[in-house]
View 1 (cartoon, helix red, strand yellow):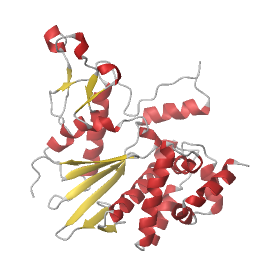
View 2 (cartoon, rainbow, N blue to C red):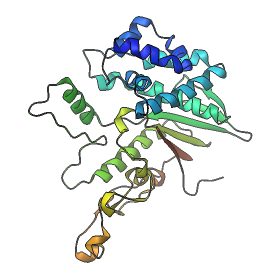
View 3 (cartoon, rainbow, N blue to C red):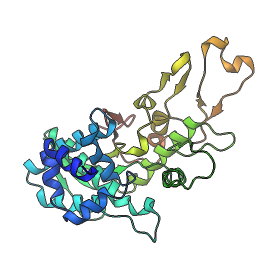
View 4 (tube, rainbow, N blue to C red):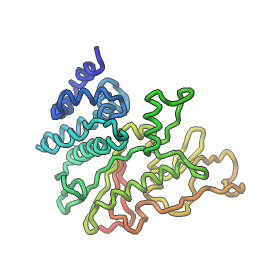
Length: 314
């Protein structure tokens, strides 16, 4: 039995997703499933054949979202997003750029579905500007949805590795936020990646009404990023601890110490031993002068986190 045949059989338990896939031409869907795991839609659908995997969790989350969207009568909107999610790579441009719309479409599907499951009245927008409006009893809230992708150089390195063209022995270290340069720390790179992404999406938000930035991490790009990175401080194996890079990206302040592997077993704090911490070179998103979002929602496969803007007006 081929992988595609096995997948179609396994998808029987994901009825809403299977219904949505009918919006795609059968031949194109089979091409997507033949492109390899670097296609985000294929990567997710593989979860039907890989129980208990991260892919399976993402597929289950998407299944619930699609079901909620179909129940609310947003079939035509879903049709357009599913077709965008099935865009095929082109040989004349880098796949990283080709897949922008694929990532965006899948992120929007999940965002709309999640919000509908929370009993919000959700209106997706197809014009320029923010992506969604949600209505509560008292007000309307603008929502800008985005998928956070790994850095382009790291994605290209991963694609090169998978192609079998990597010279030498077969081992490669992939760092989604980018490989640290001399004098940089991994935690700093993560903080910068998320702060920068929020600033990009900030441009789509209104100045004069409540708004949210929704960041979807339910892709292969970030499977290795622990949700603990959303904490101010957390403990690593062996008793070491570090500041969370994602938390720093939103609440960090310029010049605060970056802790990437401190240990109390080594005695006094590093500063007392004459060792200086690297320090953050910029303010996190919420402390930027033009930060418009009232809050940021970050969605992992098994965890959803809401960050609120400090001193946000009621």
